[in-house]
Amino acid sequence: MRMLPRLSLIILLAITLSGCFTNPSRDTPPARVGVVGKAAILPGGARTDSPGKRMETHETAALPRKTAGQASPASDIQADTAPAGPGDVWQRIRKGFSLEIPRNRRIDQLMHVYRDQQRMDRIQRRAAPWLRHIANELEKRGLPLELALLPAVESAYQARVFSPRGAAGIWQFMGATGGQYGLERNWWYDGRMDVVDSTRAALDYLDWLHRRYGDWLLALAAYNSGIRTVDRAIRRNKRHGRPTDFWHLRLPRETRSYVPQWLALLRIVRDPARYQVTLRPVPDTDAFTTLTIDKPIDLRVAARLSGIPLSDLVALNPGLKHLHTGSSKGYRLHLPQDQVARFRDALASIPASEFTGWTNYRVRAGDVLGLIARRHGTTVRAIREANGLKSTRIRIGQKLRLPLGNGAASVAALARPHRPARLNRPRTAAKKAPPRSAPAARRPASRTAQKPARGIAYRVHSGDSLWTISRRFNVPVARLAAWNDIAINQTLRPGQVLRIHAGEPAGKGATRIHYRVRKGDSLYLIARRFRVPMKQLQSWNQLSDRYLRPGQKLTLYLE
Image (cartoon, rainbow, N blue to C red; front, side, top):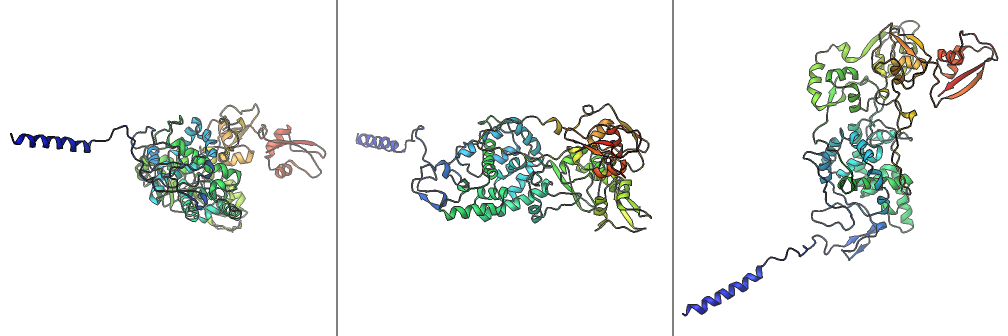
């Protein structure tokens, strides 16, 4: 009986102590980590002791890196909720995002640019071969993976693209800046359009700019408008006691929308479902392999050896301006990953004459470079580049290496018959209309659309190529190929007859002029003066012979 009061006391004490260890309610919000006790840093170095206070829209400064578990008071981006399969490069890039995106009216005004699904589809299609390579290079250097989206703003991921000011490639390098970062340029090759080389140069430059300014927004502004422009704007603000962050600087209009456009794209890629945009999965595997070729090679030979279409090989090697790797040895050729073994095996079994795409020539009496180039379907510049000639002087008996006619043809005609301009960046003031289809004058010529009623028959001679014939009759290579239902890279045979519609005016953009024949004029001299084929001049004026009389009126169509 003595044990009963003790037992009751022990039970009561156990019940009391168990109440002290009860778990809190699930409805209780967890405490925020990493916010208490930290002050927000405003532009210009000012601080506030109110950690929960949001920064004003126009005072949002640069892009601080996120830390694990830290809230984002200046960001309206939620956690990544976009579905993506395993091994997707887009998923890998999103998971690697480390920069905060500020709230800013200028960003909001540009969101519509990349909410256009058709535009995003085009960008994704162009970016697919290169996206993984760029992400790998960024990770190696410890740079933000957000920079992988910068080429979408610069060039819409078009490798063979030029701006009106002369910038080229997906990273839009000017010639002088590209030269400073080791991008080679010659008649055969432009390193600014080689995605691998230009990516290396662009990341070197961006890394240097970030170390200079300590701020990614200022670094990108300098990348777009130049260091002097940004430095001048910073000095101006300092003189007037204003903040020196990107949002307060007076910069060129293009730069003021360039950086917000990049930030708008980051918002959409971080959470595409929220903005009703679909990102097509890009396999996180190597799309291409780079091989060093110890001899010059014709791209058509390389395409045949690797078993891929020539157009695909040209797309993987946008740095080449012609269908040949050029005269230098050790060129790095990009090939599809799954065709490398086949290419290596086939390369070892072909004769040297087919491999190189060159022919040897000994200068004879009466030869000049222009005549040799015309005879072999190449150009004077190509011969000088191939033989290291500083001038056009040659001597009898001199040995020359000549690139084969089709090898000197421009790859631009194969990929696209015109030089496109860089993606036009929309202004912040007005919403840009959805992109329309290209005008008819910009579209590649079809096989039937531009075929006029009249024409002449031309018999192919030894040394002729589509390129030399198109130059002779002043018509595009693509149009000449379409008229005759042949491939643009097809080798011609002596005696073959081509249909050439030289009676067609030079195009919708051609200017018609009238010329009055003077004493001493001839068809040859007039054609040479206006740089048009003599046969075309005859066709335009329906001349049955070459005789002219002073005072006669001729019509010419000039581009």
